[in-house]
Amino acid sequence: MPGITSADVARESGVSRTTVSYVLTGRHGVSISEETRRRVHETAARLGYAPSAAARALRTGRSDLVLCILPDWPVGPVIETLLDQLADGLSGRGLSVLVHHGRGTRPLSDLWRAVTPRAVIGFAPFADEDLLAMRRAGIQVLGTLGEEHRPDAGLPAESQLEIGALQVRHLAARGHRRFGYAWPTDERLGIFARDRLLGVRRACAELALPEPVVQPVGLEVLDAATAVRRFLELGVTAVTAYNDDVALAVLAGLRAEQLSCPDDCAVVGVDDVPAARLAAPPLTTVSQSIGVQARYLAALVLADLDGAEKPAHPGHGLQLVERESA
Image 1 (spheres, rainbow, N blue to C red):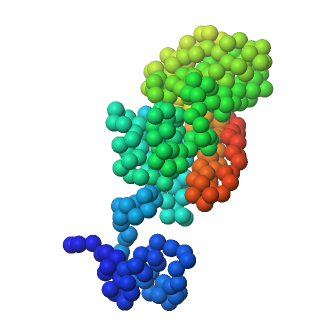
Image 2 (image 1 turned 180 degrees about the vertical axis):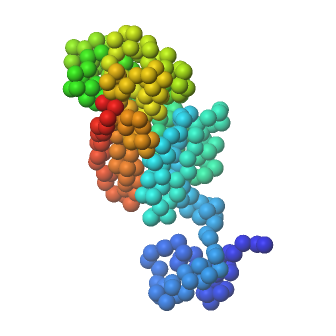
Image 3 (image 1 turned 90 degrees about the vertical axis):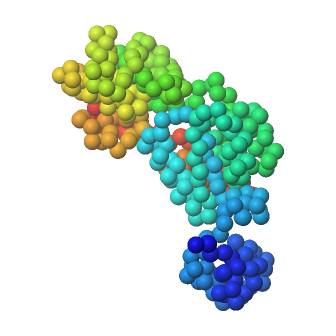
């Protein structure tokens, strides 16, 4: 069965297709009575008419999509929450979020040329040629901090450094002096793990504490128990974990070794995932205030579309959430 078109809406409303187009696209500066606008909207709703995204892109040169480019990362609760809240923040302006995972060898240009997005948000630096091509095409390109330049991927991220430092400061304030760092076994997380570990190391140096003991911690109980034994053999009394998943594995490893947390070893994670508060014991963790970051990204996109001044970055919003594990 053929779909409902704007011609059908025009015929049922008793107006021209041009009038239907003006009404349904919200075009300003055109003299159309409120009664006519109401009738067109009601007719479109009754017939179930949905404007063609492809036709709109051809007409305006842009779709109503905001394209988010994710590197080859595992997508967990934090990224899911960020994208969900970003979509909420943009939906009021008729914008939709399209997520692309950077896997495989297909050129990025194939994607953005096919969907003609209003804006592209990169969760990692773009290649110089991709960045230049998108900007020449008039596409708004943003990093997650709102930067207009291509950030140096070799430099550590300040927010990730501060995460590691927060973990150490909290544990040191509770008398711990020998730390372990639970490294994720998923190689795709290496860039974040590197920066968070560097933050741990720097905080230990500032407090005149020994270098942290670094151990890979898998998400299987036997692997985690092996890492726990190694930590304790080297005198570790507190573990700073890459994230909550790894921290929960450390807790499982402690239980497998019939050890108690925090009495035998304290543990601090990162992300404050829902499972953290349900752990045994409930997990102390670092929250990244994802809602704040999502609202900021949405505000960046809308400011550019409106030609308004960009909002100031709200800060990373990192917060230590203290529970029984530390």
